[in-house]
Length: 304
Image (cartoon, rainbow, N blue to C red; front, side, top):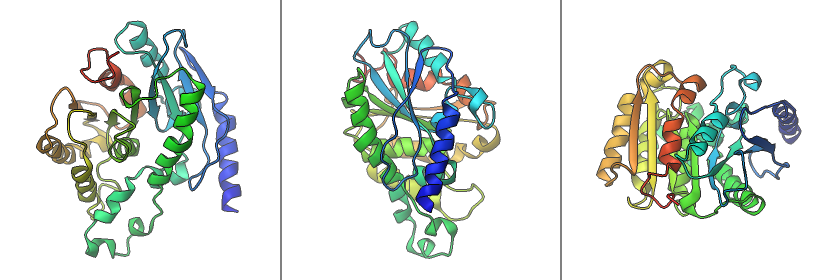
């Protein structure tokens, strides 16, 4: 019954996203994959104008894929404007040529799919023993990343004109999508060379909750950061709505980054005054993480 319910969700989402339109480039919806341990979801690939004329292309994997392109099809009538920003940056020569792989979320399972799974084990034993919903929740981030790397990336590498190496493989997302993007790089540093965690939801759960989940996430980051030199990490946040909670938590993460030896340009933390926790704000500053990840003036191996 559960599998049937999730399949129905997938069909509804797939029918909805077929109406998605882009203002620049073109969008392809991939054939369904066999999902193991996570709910089925549509996946789309955005291709810039002129593709594949500038092959090989870098690949940017992004979460919450139904929110990225068309405000007419989103629940809140907002979008990231990925197609417009990516097209403009590539047309002006500011970035290397790249495509975007947009993985939709399933709202009912999103938190469990995106929470950095191994961080929960770093809660103190007394906190893990509490009768708290988070302690009993099913976490699926490891399975989500196994899908991304075991099924999706091989499909992309074999069906599109892309460079499959880490220097051309990036990942980005916002809020919980920021957490899973960072988790992906820390778990698979041999796959991703850079990640952008936008408006990162450092509390991990509701900000007012007293379970020390944020500290557990930081402990995981501290233990698993790759040695500086081969990877780049971008953080940012606004100052309004939910983003107003993030500054002191981001400062603690920044201290971990400095202690690990990260510095500019391989690591940036940006603050955007007046920006809120929504797609309109992420659209307004989207060029910044895209330039960090794939800008031609970056000093990483993505410079080609």
